[in-house]
Image (tube, rainbow, N blue to C red):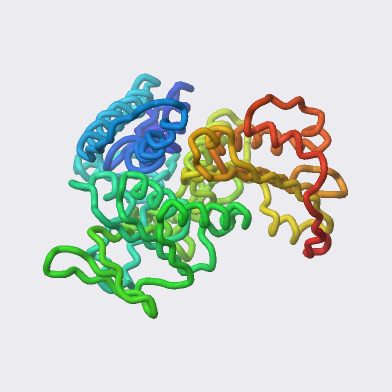
Length: 463
């Protein structure tokens, strides 16, 4: 008889946990996975996927306007929020089934239950009031929005989770935060006709992104009609007698809205998991501490994804899951590679970026070449839309290695995915220059910027 009920028990049914469970079960291992909410996790249920559907919905207001320049007569459009919510929910339910069934078809067992560690090998399934044992345990419980409990009146606010299930579209919304979640939702709500204000304590939105992208997106959002207040914060939030909310901002007065959304970072889901009983150590933010192979301080327990607070992106969690399977069940130790990770911000216009920003590169390399093209994309010309696009390459002047690639404009995320391959492969600017352009495309600028726009030496720009 086996000593344990399972070879692997996975706690958390998000993208990382499901991938690990499905692949491990496919190798013939006895695998179980528990999810207390819905299979698919943040990305599928209340993150990347529904957000992108909302982005598409919000873009139609501009598409209808732009159609006139191409000869289309479009009648006055009406938007119905409940229809969007209902159709989104149908797609999310379908995807949830796909995630659960993927594990089961591979031979794994799924539990709809909160799972808590009783010790390093024992998992308590709370909804079933029973315990099971596993030789190895993988924790992939993800993260959740920071409630910002220190803010008086935070209980009146919503977070990204609730934004996907609002019973009605607000007339006005105030969003606190300057990261990609805050920026994306500001563009979404504005595109759906909501009066939108973004409040951020920093000097410029989207910290850690290239400064050219940040400034250009900021200016574009304001031209669209999104109000952005920087270097300030909420003092408190109060609910009025008429049900509307007031965001009190020092030196800036009071902002009145139907909804106030807090997008102030995310915190790992580790509370009440029994980590201490299992000998799993956590960091200052509650994140699970892991080594280079994602192993925790308990020899038989691993952790991947947002709960480790390394890089909080779905593809990273999936990559870490695949490395886990290679390491643990295939005898091929593989460290997750967190270097040069491409990412996108689905703002409007969107951002696609990979590698080092100009400021980051200037700190690491003594001499840079910066190639920069700013132009009006062809699709905006007949539409009469005065919205510009930016393509930028940051290059080490000594080796000609392309250190960073940054795009702001239509389909920037798609470009960044392909640029990610080039930068990961260590291609040089000469490789880019040898590549034939596709005309007419916006992406051709990536391979036709032959002369640097300026240089940076020892951190100082040389025009």
